[in-house]
Image 1 (cartoon, rainbow, N blue to C red):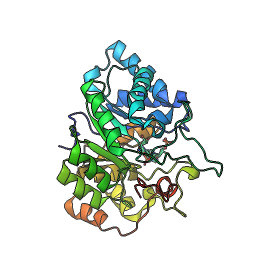
Image 2: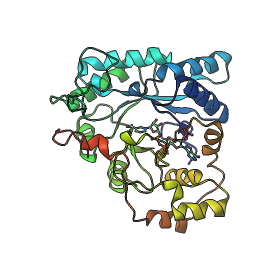
Image 3: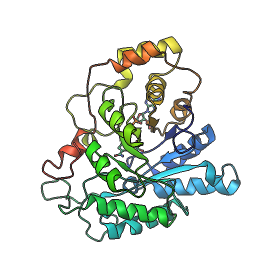
Length: 316
Ligand SMILES: NC(=O)c1ccc[n+]([C@@H]2O[C@H](COP(=O)([O-])OP(=O)(O)OC[C@H]3O[C@@H](n4cnc5c(N)ncnc54)[C@H](OP(=O)(O)O)[C@@H]3O)[C@@H](O)[C@H]2O)c1
C-alpha cells in the first residue's frame, strides 16, 4: 500500500529550489531516476522545468524509462491565474518539460498576482517590496479553466496547493473533475490533522511539502521567527538510532504511514539515494502515536500567507 500513490505510481519523489543551479537540478533528476524515483514535482515558478525536461528526454530516448512510468507534476503560477491565461501557462510548461501531457497540474497558490504581460516576472513587486496581488479573482473560474486542460488531454489530473479546507470544499461542490490533491506544508510540527480529516471525506489526498522541515531554504522564504529543526527532534533522533535509519527517513516514513504523499527535495546525490530507502522498515503503532503526540507547533511557510493580510483568498 505504501509504495503506491493514489495515482498508481511510485509514491516517493524528489525536487528542487529556484536557488539550485541548473546543473544541480540536472544531476539531481538523473540521480533520482537512477535511484528509482518516478514522481517529479516542479513548478513554473521554480524556473527549472527546462533542466528537468532535458534529463527526462535523455532517459526517455535511451529507453531507461517509459513515459507511462513517470509521474510529472508542475504548477500554474500566480501570474497566470486568470482563466484565459491558464492554457497559455501549461503550454509553456509542457514546452519546457518537452512533454505532451502532465500527470498532475496544480494551482500553486490561491492568491493571484498581477500579470503585466511578462511571463518571466513571476513575483511582481509592490513599491514597498511585497508582492502585487490581483484583487479580482474568480477561484471557480480558474478551476474551470484547469478542467478544460483535462478535456484537452494536456494533463491526466488536476489539483491545488496551499489551499485552505474551505477553498477545496468550494471547488469540490461544483467540480466536474475534483482536485486529486492539495499540496501543503506538512510534517511533525505542522501535521495538518484537520486538513487531512476534512479532505479524506472529500476523497482528496494531501501531498506534503517541506516533509523534513526545509532545512536549507533561505530564511527570506520562510519567516516564522526562531525555528527548530525537525531533523534534531529528540523523538526522531531516538527512532533513527533504533532503526539505524537517518532522521529524514524516519520523518518520511511517518508521513507515508499516515497515508500522505511526500516530496522530499535534495540536490545531494547521497541524500537523494537514501531518502527513497523508506520501504524496508515500519514504525510501530506506539511510535506513530508518540510522534502524533508531539505538541510543538511550527509553520515554516507562514510568510506566504501573511504577505496578504486582507486578500479574500488568503489561505492562512
Ligand atoms: N507548493 C508549494 O508552495 C511548495 C513550497 C515548498 C516546497 N514545495 C515542494 O516540496 C519540495 C520539498 O520541500 P522543501 O524543499 O521546502 O523541503 P524539504 O524537502 O523538507 O527539505 C529540503 C532540504 O533538506 C535537505 N535534505 C534533503 N534530504 C536530507 C537528508 N536526508 N538529511 C539532511 N538534509 C536533507 C536538502 O538539502 P540538499 O538539497 O542540499 O541536499 C534541502 O535543503 C520542494 O522541492 C518543492 O518541490 C512546494
